[in-house]
Each structure stands twice: as structure tokens, then as C-alpha cells.
Length: 290
Image (tube, rainbow, N blue to C red):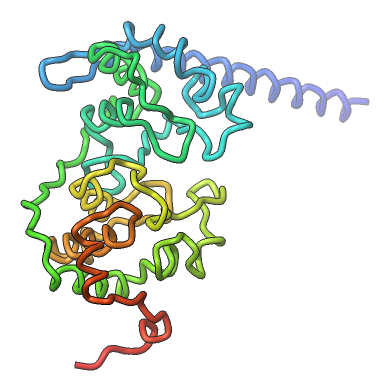
């Protein structure tokens, strides 16, 4: 009986310690979140405030992103791709290096632009000030924004003129960087790796279909496409090529990919004039000779 009494005493003590620790953790978490409600955003001359953004979030965003911003709103189970988990401070669309926080302008642009092929729409009903306030509230969910600064903004060099040489050179970049393994040799998102791709949460994810798509995940201009190459899409298999591509190579790749899209672009006209054929994956696997 004495052993049993000692055992129950130990279990009771452990339960009390656990409950006390959990209560303290909850208080600390709540305190931290309340402190982060002082969060601001700065976009040009606009200053956003988290306190003003809270009712906007509860009206427009909570159904998908959840009450605590973890992407587990009541609608999330029906959505693919899943809503962003704001608590992690990880975002696909950035002008900053991979692994770093986005700028307030990046988040501002995302709200206004939306994310193609997702349930994230363009929030046209929101005023500029509403968007700034909403960004401040979104930032308050992650402690990263209280401790870290955004990365340095990518400097995009002037876009060179479209030429036959650049379109052909872009096809070579497409080949040797093995973009075709995910996006397919004709840009139809049907490469040999396409069906195996997952995001950082082990959820299936599809590569972009250049053959059918006109808007990208993070924009629609040539500069947007260049930025995607050089910053990557964090939490997805799309890496940053900042350490692998020279600026002129990235521009060449932009031009070649434009030739694969359904719009009537100058690049597409050049590819047709040249009789440019899709790359040969078998040739791509062979070692290059000098």
C-alpha cells in the first residue's frame, strides 16, 4: 500500500507541475501575442496598425487562415492548396532572399494581386489603408516579425531586348538547370518529377503550367518571373537560383518561358520563326563537352 501511495503522489505531483507549466506557457503566449498587437506595417506613406487590422482579418480571412493564423480555419479542410500558416513567418511571394522575411510591400502586393490557382483572391474591396492594417495584423501572428528584419530586396537589372539569341540561350538554361523535370519539356507541368512533388509539410504540390497559364503564383510580368527565379518560392520545391544563375541567364530563361505560354508574345513569334523544338531530355542527361 505504501508503494502505491508513493506512486500516486508522484503522479499527482507530475500532473500538477504539467498543468502549472501549461498554464504558464499559455499566459506567456497570450502575453507575447498582446505585445505583438503593437505591430505596424509601412508601405510608402501608409502606416498600418494591427489593432485596426484585426476586425478586417475576422471578416475576410479567419475562415481560411483560422483564429490564430495557423491556416486551420473552418474552411481549410476543403481548400487545396492549403491556406498559409502565418505563425511560421514563411511566405512564397517575396522580393527578399530565400529563408528571409518578406517586406511589407511584398505582403501588400500579395493581398492586392491574390494567388493564382488558389482560393486566395484579389482583395479589390479593401482600401489601401485597409490592406496596410491587415498586413500589420497578419505580421503579429509570427514572433519572427518582432525579432527579425526582412531580407535585402532583390535588385532586378534592366530587362534586355528580346532577341533570337536570348530565346535560344534561355532554352539552354531551361535544359541545364533541369526545369523540365518538373515543368515538362513543353511547359505543361508534366515532367517526370511533377507527380512526386510535395511542399515542406509533405502535401502534394503541382508545378506551374506555362503552356496554359498566363499569370504566375507571384505576378504576371517579366520582372515578376525573374524575381521568382532569384528568390524561390519558400516552403515549395521551387528553389532560389540566385547562386546558380547570372542575371543575363535569368533574363534568357524568362524569354524562353514566355515562348511556351499561350499568349502571342514576341518570344513565341521568335521561337516559331526559328522552328524551335522542345528540348530532348535524353540529351540533357548527357555530359557536356567543351
